[in-house]
Amino acid sequence: MSGGPGGETFDDIPYLVSSGLNRDRDLIVMAQRGNLYDTPDLACPELDRFYATSVGLPSYAPQTERLMLEAAKQCRDRLTAEGTDLSAYNSTENAADFADLRTALGIKQWNVYGHSYGSNLALTYLRLHPQGIRAVALDSIAPAQSVSLPFAWASAQEGLANLYKACAAEPRCNSRYPDLERTLDEQVRKLQAHPLTLNVRPPQGGAPVKVVLDGGALVNLLVAKAIPFKDVPAAIDELARGHPERFARARAAGSVQVTGQTAHGLTNSVVCSEWVPDHTASDVLDAGRRAFPHWPDPVLAQAPQLAFQDQVCRIWNVPDRTARQRVAPAASVPTLFLNGTFDMKTGPSWAQQTARTLPRSSTVQIPGIGHWTVPQSPCAQKVLASFLTRPTAPDTGCVADLKWEPFTITPK
Image (tube, rainbow, N blue to C red; front, side):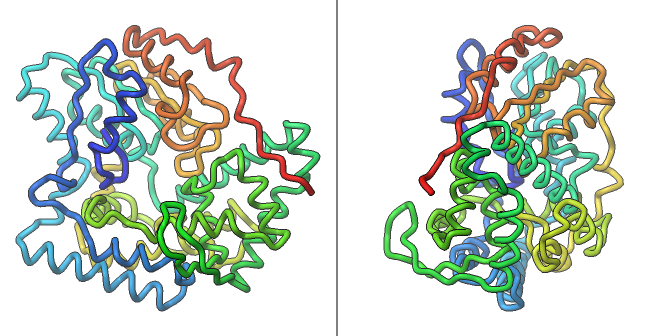
């Protein structure tokens, strides 16, 4: 079960295969309803075009908000005019599709693996359709009972805090970047007050594009793992010394969008029915202030990577499903939680909280890894393989000796 919601599922297959998931067993991959190649396909090329141009706009300016909401409305109007019922795209229906697939294929029992939103969907599936599930592996847990916009700030804080601790524990990093947290705080405030505008060539190639680097952009790039973790301290230090090139190139990468690849309509139908309705805009700001008390309110008022989502959801107008969705699963099915310590999208501590109602669960944290651990970590691959072989006794021995990749040390 893939992430997003709305991510292009079949793009995951090379990563799943290279991670060995089909080495000694069949691997079944199904795109969720509304995804690319589905009918109807809930792609929003209108939003793809907005995201491509947004790299040259201030992150949270009124003009940026207006353009995003116009794109969301155009997509919604087009989909509904085509007869698409946007309320039919949610985790309950997604889970029922997977239950129907098992029956249609005549499979008595199978294992379930989900990453990011796919872990949320897997928990929903486990709660509603436990029959036929042998074991469940959850990678980068987004717990169905907890995910909301305020959740994003807690996760960002946890991942960044773990990265700071790792740098402090590495003598060369600690010596070269002794005030990493303070430096980032200063840069978020500085860039939000005085954004930089640059012309930068995207890493994918092509002509230079206009890039606006402000506090919101800086935070979103870090959460999105747009800078490799080993380079983050160096990138922050360079930025403070007047060299924003690493962050600017990462921002420019967003100007290259594969139109129609992501099903933004599926994203909005799930997010607007399950993640948004049970809190206010002030709840998001309060969560941001708790996580990052030294950052400016205009940055903290928008959840990372989910800007203007309250306003988008008023346009998307799908029913509130939080009462149905925000239910902790309670099952005796063996469950494995895999999380990376540097994950700024889904903080690793959510695994421990979610495991409380799953008595036959194991939780594993992979040092120095971010979102979606298995393709990035041979150890995570070994743990997952052993879990699928012996769900009640996975071999986690490789974790004890793991270290994060040494941080990049640049000359002063």
